[in-house]
Image (cartoon, one colour):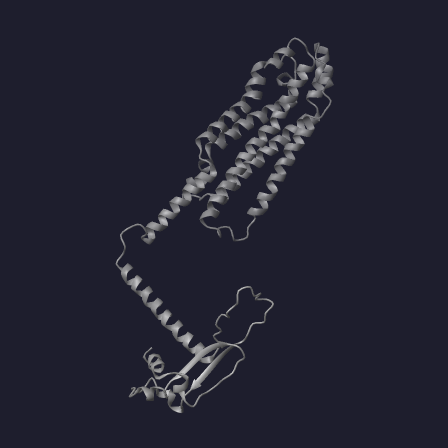
Length: 363
């Protein structure tokens, strides 16, 4: 405002400086509204994917549109900037008399570049509207009633975006009008303050206030997502009965688990016995302190089998009459380190005392 007051007395650089900053407001305001709408659409997608990662697995044009729309918008916004700001501002400065205004300033302020730039800004507003419509169509549930479907895009859209689009529309509409009508142009010396402040500066100011209030009232995205995950986990826990009174099948289920575990343990024991009989169980080798396990070759594990007589197959099926008979009815497996060999003895009592044989049978 101080710059604007200075230009009323000295029609020189203050007028150009104020006009440059005013012109930059249009593409910046467009970018603010665009980023707000685009972020809201991404937030809706993030919530759906967090609930169901495969919700958008079906191929569609959604990804392609979300990839192309930002390039179209920023292409229009940058074109508006380069058509308006980087230009010769000298003719705009020549407004020291009415003749200078009509001969120099008016043609420069209403030339073809200003008109094309204003319509490009309108194109950017339409892209923002389509992006909002795209997010509503993809991420919001449509009502079933006819009236609800007709008013779907107005009812489902956040109210702050509708207000923001209206404010942006006023700003772009004033830019189009000033590109054709010199009397309301913000570049004209002595223009009415109602035009330049009412339609030029008020919409950006209200937009800043609107988004700051909404940002202060709304919950952070990550915090909102954590809260939604907590609610979802609580709902699943309630459906499964976690944290509540245990249902009637709870005890039976635990017994069933214990039975399966017991059967699995018995099966593992049987498999272990069978592997020992086949001779494929290799015990860990004893390693002397200081020895390098990688330089010294590993000795091959051997399984020594010693039988007393051909009647050893019936040891577990018949009763034991005496200790001497027991010595002739057992089969022993012992593991040793060294060369694999098999040895037998005709006198099992010499190899194993009768007391050890009895202990093995009892085991």
